[in-house]
Every structure is written in structure tokens, then in C-alpha cells.
Image (cartoon, rainbow over all chains, first blue to last red; front, side, top):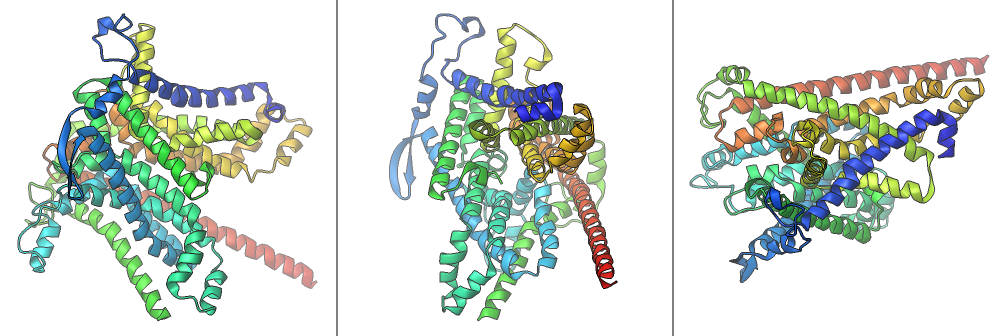
Length: 307
Length: 288
């Protein structure tokens, strides 16, 4: 701090500190504290706010347990509160998206880092970046066209006699899965590629010279080396998937519900901002837990993930 | 066997890129199909009428203008805040640095819906608390700007910080020793060095802001941005005008990206040539 003072003078140091303080206090810390505080307040008519009825309560959080429905989880019939079900399914499918993204990405990252001629790398990067430059809503829309009942995919498969009649692809969570993987797979490629390109190719050759089969080379040498990249990619994909609102709404079916959609319903349909705040806080809590879990599991630091 | 695996990897990469690009191609092609629902099957002939319909759509143009205004505002604020934060982080150390840095980074991991709701609730509460009807405290695009800056500033901060770490602080010392004022050190030495990172940060902020849906959706009040507008169109019966819009946006961003890339390659070539020249000069000197 004293160093900064000496270099840039009193005025500039003050401005720098104020700008940073404005960001962290007014845009990050205080909004989140307000969110937490609101989540404990009941929904009241404007006239009663601040009155005797305005007491802190856990009611908003307990609404998660309202309204049980019967459903089946992996063939077992269970009776479970609707919002708990939505919450768990959101976590489950976000994890599935993360794993699918990793499986899709790994061979490509290996190809880019170890097989491809480095001179054609910028071209590949440019091609990969094209979907990133197209906004998320349009990417979801593109799949909405493809997966439509009488859309290109059904037509193609019918023409090829793979299926007899058009299939409703967007059913259950299928559409959401396809959309989320397509939208967020790129957030896995770049970190995994970065980690892999720092691996010395001699290590792979040494393993092969010593008679290791290809799968063991990957399992024991390439994969462990990529751990930080995988961790950061997984965190990005999971957070983006769990927090996504566009893709589950556009590609969702009548039987799919995402937790962010539930939050939105509390906010705009029920106009109950306090319950929306409670649900939003639950989402934040879940994401924080996931990040800490990954950090512990992969033994990486927060600063490694943010790269 | 080794050759076979290499070919397999090549085929995989090719298929993967097709997988990324074909959906966009289909979406673009549907803009020309003379069919009321946006699709490429059945193909009913080429038409330009969806582009005409798009240009006549006033709501779209208003949303487009809103998007640009928000994106410019977000870029400017994020550059200011992000650069200041990077300079601050770079000149402190120890616990304080770790805490502040962690706090800044964590903004990247907060779900957009949470940022949107918390921003909205806080500013409206402040407005209610001081009984003010001032526009700042009502839902609207200005809150979207604040919400977006809260995490986009972290991206700018990371870019600027990366460049700051290779900055030679001796330059500042030298300037100070030679009698430069603090303002001069900032304006003539530090900032020019940071300009490339600040520029890149601005570009990232601009694109991120255009893309943003979650934060905007929860804070926008009644105003539309392009993303929100497209979303509402997709939800409520659409015509291929959206495809026409998508195609034009894709071409515009692609042209920008390719221009950027060509520029980068040109600069790299010039730099290579310069280095080769320098090597030749040294070699010549040594020869004599």
C-alpha cells in the first residue's frame, strides 16, 4: 500500500481504492448480504413492512418441502416434495452434463495438444471459438430447430430408414441435456487443453517405450497431469449448467423443470421476492459446496480454477 | 496401431468441429427458407422476406440499441473498476491480498440468477429505505449494468493483472527519479503499458454483456435487450425473422473475430521479421 502511495500519489491511490471498494462492497458483498437478509423475511403487503408482523422466519426456506408428488427415481416409486425433486434433478443433470462434456473433450484436447501440428492450432482455435461468439440463446434456438418433431434430425433419420416416423426428441430432460452440453462443452476444452499442452511429450514416449499400453499411459500420466484443467473445466461447466435459465426454458419439455426456473416463478409469477431470495441463496450454497468439493477432491486452489 | 489411433483422433476432431458448426449452419440456412416455421425441412424455396420483416421490426431495433448502450456502459465501468482492482492487487501482499483476490475471483462463480436477484433487491430496498423515487432505485437496465459489472470486472481484472505481472517497476522508479509527477507516471508509463490488456478486457466485457441473459432477466424491469427479445420470440411462436437476425449477428461477430485474428497474425509476422533482422545484424557484427 505504501508502495502504491509513493508511485502514484495520494489522489490516484484514493481513486483506485474507492473504485475497488465500490465494486466489492456495492456490487458484491452488500447485495449478497441483502439477499440473505431478505430470504428470512415474510411476504407482506407494503403497509405492513416494518410492522409487528415483519419478523425473521425460516418459512421461505421451508417452502421447499411443500407439495409432495409421487414419482419414480430409477424405477423406485418415491414421494418427494416438488422443489426438492427439482433441486436434486438439477444437481444430477448438471453433474451428468459435466461428465459428458469431459468425455467429449478429452480426446480432442489430447489431439490438439499432442498430435496436431502446432502451426494449424490457431485455425482450430478459431473454428472452436465460432460457437462461443454466437450468443447462448441462439445456440439453444439452433437445437430447438434441429430437435423439432418434424425437424431436420427426424427427417434425416426417416430418410435413412433409421426410424419409421418422426420422434419427439425434446422429452423429459433430453433437450436440456443436448442443449447444455452443446452450449458449455467449450468451457471444458480450453482448460483441459491448457493443462495437457504443458505435459512434456517425452513422458508419454518414455511410458510407451517401457511397454505401457495406451490406456495405462493416459490413466497414469496424461490424466493426473490434467487434474487442474479438469477441475477448472468441471467447475465452469457445472456452475453454468446449474445456473442456466435460457437452455432449460427453450429446450425444456413439459416434464422438465430446472431450479432456476423455480426461482424465476417465485420472482415473477408469485411476486414473492423474499422466497425467490431464499431459493437463490440455496442455489448459491449448492454451488459453493460443489466448488469446495472439487477444490478438495482435485487439491487445487481457487486461483487455479479462475484461470 | 499407432497410425490408426492418430487417424482416429483426426477423424474425431473433424467430427467434433462439424458438431459445433452444423447447428449454426442450419439456423443460418433457415433464414432463407420460404416457410412460416423456422426450419430447413421442408425446403420451400429461397426468399429474402424474413430479412425485410426483420428490418421493419421496431421492437428489435429498440432492443438492439438497448443492448449496445448496456454493453458500452458495462465495458467502460468494468475497465475502470477492473484496472483499478488489478493495480491494487498488484501492489499489496499477504493476507489482505489473498482475501481480496479470492473475493474478486468468487464473483465469477456466482450464478447469474443470484447476481440478478441480489442486485435488484438491494437497490430497490435502498430506494424504499430512503423513500426515493429516483430512477436508480427502480428495476431497469441501469441495474442490469451494475449486476453485469459485478462479475465482468473480475475478467478485466484477471487480464490486466496478468500483464501487470510482467511490468518492469524500474521504469516507474526511473520516471520518478527524473522528476516526473505521479500523474505523469500513471499516464505516460503505467497505462500505456496496460493498454493491450485493457483493450482485450474491454472487448471481453462487451461480448459478455451482449451475451448476458440471467442477470438482465432479473433486473431489467420492462426493458428489452436483444437476448431477452430473441428469447421471448423463441418462446412465443416464431417466424424465421429470428434466423435472419441470428445469421446477421453471426456474420458480424465472425467478421470481427477474423479481422482480429488477421491483425494478430500480421503483427506476429512483423515481430518475427524484426527479430530475424536483429539476429542478422548481430551475426554480421560478430562476423566483422
